[in-house]
Amino acid sequence: MVVVLIVGVLAAVAIPMMRGRINEAKWTEGKTTMGTIATAIRAYASEKRSTGAYGANQPSMGRLGFIPTDFTGTYFDATNYSWTTAYVDGGAPPLTFTITATAPVGIASPTSRTLNNLGQWTETP
Image 1 (tube, rainbow, N blue to C red):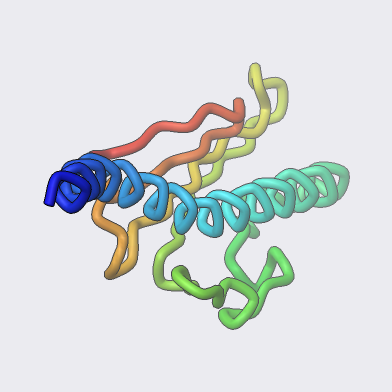
Image 2: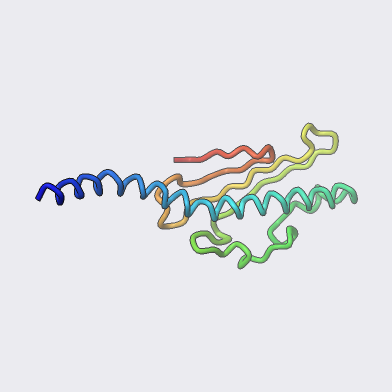
């Protein structure tokens, strides 16, 4: 009886800790895709900067070379991602962007994560 009680107490403590690890593991997929989008935005800006055509051609999914199924993973898909960009010649830095991923159903926390051009991550609980 004592052994069952001890196992029950350990399970009660361990399960909430494991739940947080599961959510973080799921978010790894989203963060990896956000890094891929950031790389594509940087490459796109570098290419368009040399032609002077960036301002008229903001980087959309298609212009970055993606199709919606490229973002389809186990937990996240294309509907979970959005981004804004700005390129200003002579700006410091010239390229700024923000990529946001919203949590799909099944991920309790955080509700969204954001990556900016400086590589800084923020999250909304």
